[in-house]
Length: 260
Ligand SMILES: Nc1ncnc2c1ncn2[C@@H]1O[C@H](COP(=O)(O)OP(=O)(O)OP(=O)(O)O)[C@@H](O)[C@H]1O
Image (cartoon, rainbow, N blue to C red; front, side, top):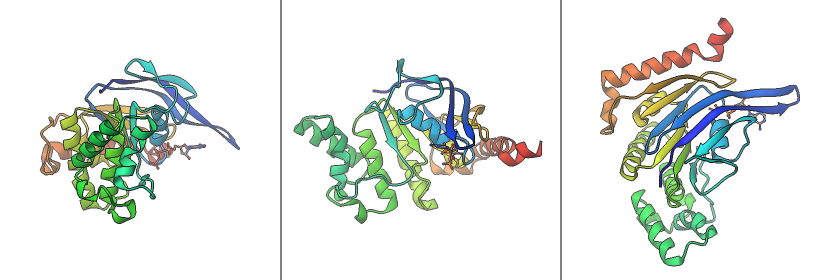
């Protein structure tokens, strides 16, 4: 069910009125099977562009993306996506949203019902299965979005700032929730965020990106094991790793690069 993601020498330019805009430059990285990897970087460094290429929504200008050894050539159910802004269909209930991809893929009624119920339960929304998105809080909407991505049992979960629009407290609750779901399911995850504390809390490994054009500035192991709770954010070890990444991002920010 889970797979390794490998990105080789990937570059991306967009055509603009003033000529080609190089957004990603020679990115090589890996996410091993069952690993949780975060990509951090300042706004505009190309994180979403990179994730969209992995999702098959954008084409790279050069380089290659392999999932389980197969080239990514377009969108597919082997990758589950969750975006920052709630992308639930407003006219469908939680159940309808979670079921949507399975229906498209013509999964039989009995299996569909079993999987939908199971994933709605995993995200703690059983009582709200028949509610429309407008009746849900922001945190509940994102839990539904996570269920919708996971119900297809993808090989990798791609998360684009999934908690970016939530208040601090809800965000922390969902970080803890996501962490436990990922640890229990053993799914491979690539998540982008500009929240360094979030990345250190969730990731086994972090890639820090430089400002545009985005390049991999550093790869950082997070040696905190997989028994994490929110309390670990207050430990000196955690704060030291967080500070190291903040310093690194600052030294690669557009302002620091202009000053050189
Ligand atoms: N289709 C496009 N055409 C032209 N430029 C684009 C296009 N998509 C993105 N860009 C530019 O590419 C750069 C990187 O954008 P991207 O959204 O990937 O960055 P990001 O790191 O995800 O930023 P943020 O954290 O603010 O979401 C930006 O300067 C953006 O304006």
